[in-house]
Every structure is written in structure tokens, then in C-alpha cells.
Image (cartoon, rainbow, N blue to C red):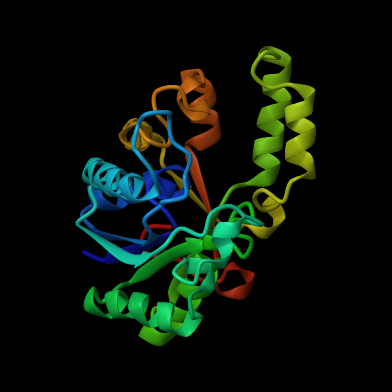
Length: 261
């Protein structure tokens, strides 16, 4: 049995880009530890769901526990930083937020977990944090630093395959124009979302675990509810988009391969 530590910025981030890998790892007998940097206080939520950020953090912690149980996570660790909010917002300047944290200190907190668990592999995010969120970018920076501190050589940066998503959007726009408009495609094309396929060296087939991935998404009711975009996709569209999880290995040239990847 090996141990995978998967590091994320907010509750619910574990679902989309690593949920299948977590479920697959656990099902194959490996120990999975989920580390979350912030409480997700600055997330949007349905009207009347909670009274404000602090209550939201409590709700999201409970949702994360349910998601972790569904995916087979053995241990959940909260680093207890405050959510930094979206890029360019006032919340970015809060001295308690993750974006303002000292990278070395945050890395030491994560390295402690990696050492306690004798981690064999750790997942972080790509250098842009997937789409530029300050907390996601910090996960990348802190995660790589912590892996060096703890001597974990198997480091994989979770990302989305930009070319794959563009191809799916193009096909969907023809079959379901009501769901994928030309404006949506243009917005995606101009965004920094994901990584070109040419820069991705690791793909994990998680198709047998799509049910668990969906259930973990549903567990995050404050963020995704029952009408989130992913949950509204036809079954075949969801499978096409999310049956593979994509990673960039930290070793240049893709020479690194983990026990699961």
C-alpha cells in the first residue's frame, strides 16, 4: 500500500480534477490523505443557505467530510488559512488569507503532513492554478516547496486538458447549441483555463469512478447544489469530459511515473 496526499485550495476543489484519482487510489488499496488550505469562506452560496462567511466555512467543512467519505479518503487535514476570494477582490488583501501567507511557513505545515504520512506522491495544481485563482496558485507554490522539504519525489500538478475541452465544446455546440453557445466558446478560448495537451504528460483513466465523482460533487450543496453545470450535463457528455484526469509531472520531460499514474 502507498500513500497519496492530495492538496487543494477549498472544499469542493477535490472533486473535479482529482476526485476520480482519489476514488481509484482508495479502491485499489492505497491510503489517501486530503489537505485543504482554506475554509472556502468567500465562496458564493444560495440565498438563505447560511448567514455569512463564517457560517459558510462551517457548512463547507461538513460538506468536505461527506465528500471525503464518498471518495474513500482516510484522513482530512485543514491548514486553516482564510479563503482569498477571486483575483482582484478586496479579500486578497486580508492578512489571514492564503494568498498573503508566507510560502515557506505554509510549506512547512504541509511538509509536516507529508512526513507524518510517509507520502509516496502528492498532487498540487498547475502553475496558473487551473484558472488563475490566487489560492490555487498558492497551492502550486506551497505544494512544490513542501514536497522538496519532505523529500517527496512523486509530484503531479492537476490540470485540465485545454485542447480536449475545446474539442468537446465544439462538438457540443453542434449537438446542443442551447448548452454551449458561440459566446461561451469564445470566452473559454480567451481565458487562461487549463493546459495545452502538448504540455501534459500524465493521464489517469477514472471512468469506473464517475459515480463517486458525481456523488462527491453533490455533497457540496452550498457550492454546486443540484443545478450545477456539471450535474446538468447529459451522462455521455459528463463521461466524455471527466473520465480522464490530467496531470503534469514535476520532473521535466515526463520522466516521473507514480504507482498509480
